[in-house]
Amino acid sequence: MGNNLLKGKKGIIFGALNDMSIAWKVAELAHEEGAEFVLTNAPIAMRMGEINDLAEKTNSKVIPADATSEEDIEKLIEESMEILGGKLDFILHSIGMSPNVRKGKHYTEINYKFYNQTLDVSAGSLHKVLATAMKKDAINEWGSVLALTYIAAQRIFPDYNDMADAKSLLESITRSFGYHYGIKNKVRVNTISQSPTVTTAGKGIKGFNEFINFSDQMSPLGNASAQACAEYCISMFSDYTRYVTMQNLFHDGGFSNTGVTQQVIDKFEE
Ligand SMILES: NC(=O)c1ccc[n+]([C@@H]2O[C@H](COP(=O)([O-])OP(=O)(O)OC[C@H]3O[C@@H](n4cnc5c(N)ncnc54)[C@H](O)[C@@H]3O)[C@@H](O)[C@H]2O)c1
Picture (tube, rainbow, N blue to C red):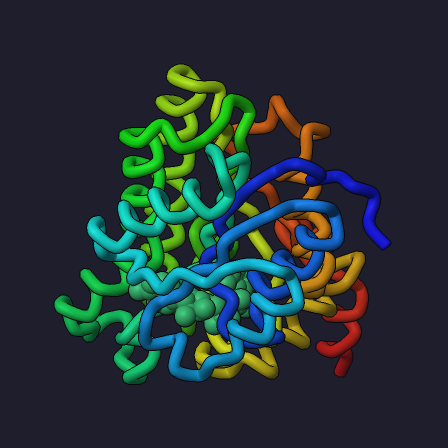
């Protein structure tokens, strides 16, 4: 049972691949909180078909769109406003993919064609979504746009590879567009920097299982789950956070401000 935090709000949710996806949890909770939305994902991700179960459960429509295609995004935004009967109040960008990570290329020897794809899919797509929404005046005043990021944008985590560069760019686009869209129409743009989470994208990172345990022991509250991340996203879409914009918000159980924990020190005892 929700609290109607998003009652009357309309949105678009990118990136629900399966029930582990952070976007999947956000969609379930947004529905519970009274929002109406369109679900979208890359046409290739539709093949799995799982998104249709989510659509049925949340009473929403699915529109396939490759987030790197300006044409697809235009069509997505136009059709979403038609389906929802008005402008949008929230957008979740929950998209990440690196062909270099997938193909196991070392950061110092990446393939540059793949590199451009990493940056385009994982960061440039946010610029395209915001630029298209602005051009079409598709977001209501005080609307909220969120993208998901990781602390490798600020610090080196070697196996995160070129996704670290993509996340730095994503956070920079968030600040820049947050400024311009704030001035133009009081639209806010933020990133949430989430703990490592077991999802299809997460598991693609080398040594992920060991790393997730390390992160858990380095966080006073432990790693934040996908469900907890969804709860934070809902609060950021609600009217209770209207003056938060252009921020990178850590949702990581305290990891980002921890130098070391006793638990980790104990592991080095002779
Ligand atoms: N899982 C983690 O440990 C973790 C931690 C911090 C941040 N994040 C971020 O959270 C976001 C969501 O990832 P997730 O962990 O839920 O994994 P996920 O694999 O479930 O989601 C990634 C999504 O990106 C979509 N995508 C890929 N290419 C696309 C394209 N061209 N157009 C449209 N969509 C495309 C995929 O189909 C998939 O739905 C990503 O930005 C990821 O980097 C994840």
